[in-house]
Amino acid sequence: MFQQLNCTNISSLLFLVSLLGIFLNQKNILVMLMSLEMMFLSISFNLIFSSIRLDDIIGQIFSLLILTVAAAESSIGLAILVIYYRIRSTITVELMNLMKG
Image (cartoon, rainbow, N blue to C red; front, side, top):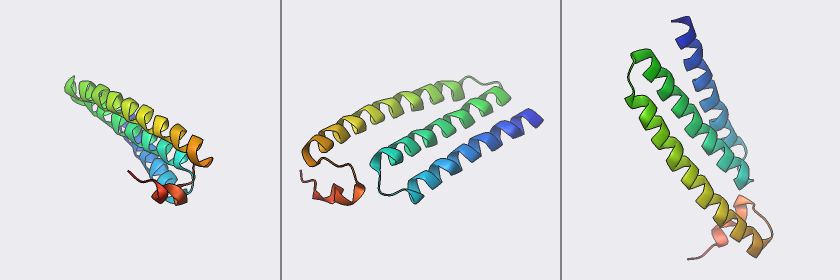
């Protein structure tokens, strides 16, 4: 019980740190993407810990699905970011509204 409580606290703390990373740093898109990935990771940790506690495999399978989708989202986001940097020579969020398409 004590170990499960610590794991849930670690997952919640990781989620809150990533939420603060998104809201406090709104100028750098790369840090925002990293915070979003950390948020997905904390949700996956929580699913895995709950799955172990309940002795069920579904949470672990769903966690793998979440991590796969997060990796695909991250690679597409970084590819768009590289193309945007080549065009504008900056990656600040303030200039993102200039993108048209």
